[in-house]
Image 1 (cartoon, one colour):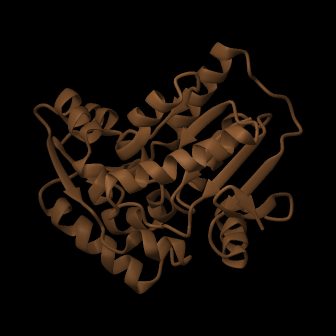
Image 2: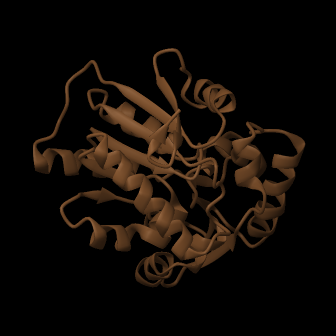
Length: 264
């Protein structure tokens, strides 16, 4: 079983990619919507949430943990590996390397939360792979909340993205990286604003490939039919609605309310 978690519904973009790549794997997903967004929170607090969720997922039988959240990966991935040395973790890394390799203009944009930009992981990736490339950044304030509310293409969501993208486009950006797992759900709107000349990079398929490699190395490949359980620490009805909208399914998914180590 693969366990995945995020601060909310953003990690469903990773879950979707993993299911497409590995249709036989049983999956359990936990969206910590009681604490969304993680971005503005102190690193120690995000680590505490991440540890509690990891312990729960392992207790449910997960053998691989996917930190399907850029903020949690930046704040807690290295720390989690130290806390659980026998557990394979797959985290999110801003896809600056493929962006730097594919840009023609030499100008790359990254959309992510403040915690991701402030983390050592992001700084290391930029230092290693983006030399000679101009990297523009924007935190898209309010965008995670809009996506959590199901507003993927409304006027407020468009305004947030236009405020982020227009200055980057004016500076010649031709490649934009999704540095938050929520943001792939607004890629159609980003493509409308940016136009056909801008490549949008979603890291989820690369994460799914890495999960596949980890499973193969440990001989953990599954076979259909696979089970999918989705949990939220927030209210169930809107979570069910977002599952139906973002994954295109709800009836075949077991949906449960999670309160710390307890279920409702």
